[in-house]
Image 1 (cartoon, one colour):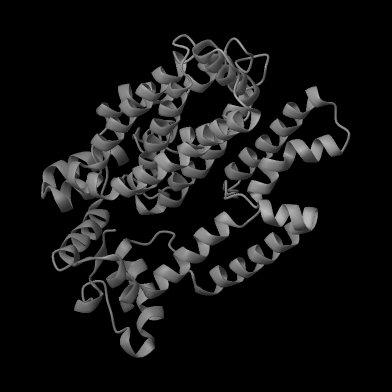
Image 2: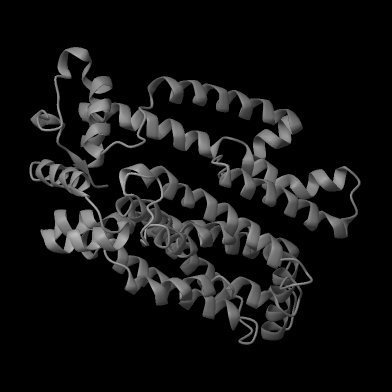
Length: 409
């Protein structure tokens, strides 16, 4: 039974990844899409609040500036959250940090929910900033944590929940952002606060799940707790091979060295990992999906769609993306392409096509297969690229000293 893909015994392996997704990548996708729907109402609210305070309206350009800051402060918070995530998860463990993240998200939801009642658009700014910090944490914790709690043969399956819940978050934001649900002028504060529900669900349920086996064995040195966590997550059976892999990681980490950014760039044993990471992340940012999201309203308007129908047509775009992620395609939300769109119009997608083609060729040629392999086995594959065939007489039990490095930014 334990050799099959889906063990017959009841385990938490298939329960915890969705729960991590609900509070992990789901809020990130949700806040990307949901902010577009109440934009008119929020700009009107900013102006009305200013008139009530000062007796005169704001200039339209000032309103647009404040609105732009409300949108962009989410990214600033996400950047800060991502910067702090590595240090805090190492010191306080991932599960504890994720629970604290849920508290941040709940606080943000309260700011959003009562901003209109308090007649304070500043509360929207604070809420978006806190949401950004929370998603900066959770989007980093989710893939790491779910990878650590999954057996090798299911790691690819469980890691796919990152993409699935991210696009599901976008789709959910588009659905409940419709004027018939929460996108009306009366209910938009609750629209922006609604993702607090996912944080509450995760905050209540996460304490009942164990820490990751690798954390318990490598960082806490508690083998019995590690075995107990494995039984709870993966069910009864012979999991000695997975425990041996974790032990090899622990042995390797005893001689690891923490690298600074400049040292990381110079380190030969991590050179191809960096190349591939930079290629993948650059492709995510330049694949063109952002052009589809940002300019869908303009495209549909140019195509003579009635204005009241455009939100529903855009919803179809989100639905297609969600279905694609379930089928293991991943369409990320990337940076804006204003200059390309202004100068090239629809032909800008030809540039995106070229970027995707080059990235696909590079990844096909150089990215090692990771399915069913331990971290040490994957590292051995990268050693072949980093050191060449002459320097890859490496086995899992015999890694060159100079290759045993871990990185902390």
